[in-house]
Length: 166
Image (cartoon, rainbow, N blue to C red; front, side, top):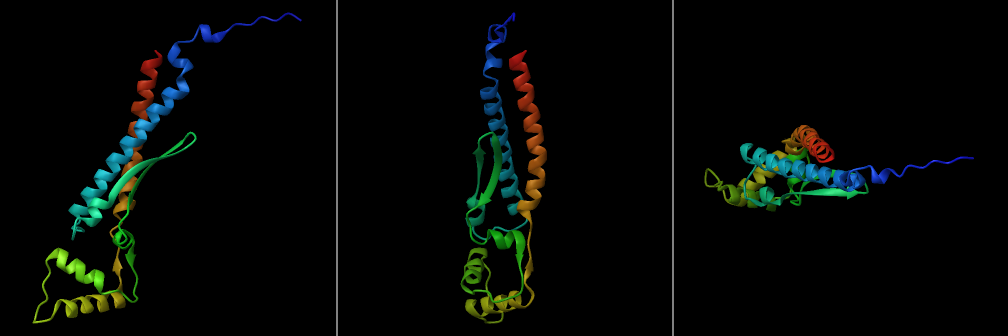
């Protein structure tokens, strides 16, 4: 049997031999860009929507890139406990008064008609207990926007990879 062998690494540009590393770096950059832009847009939505009583929710918005092998994910999140209520709303049911008092103080809300802060907070808690409230869905709408940001970032990454390989 006759065997002929051509060693392709001699013919390939150095960047092509490191294509895996190059692609990973470029796509990681795209994921970071997507996460940063998503977190910024989420903060903007929260401010524009008037959901800032204190800056706790706003300051709790953060981002990261989760990486598992070749899988990369741009993630935005909040570490603030009440973020889930702002996002999803709350159905009828018992409501603790303490957080409502804090919210009223942060917003500068003063009771009317000679009520105390506690009385006003109980009235709000009773209303929420009866009717609940709708969520704002800031994360959900930001996720929709992040998908288009990611597509554009990936297209730019592919263009940079192609330029390196040309």
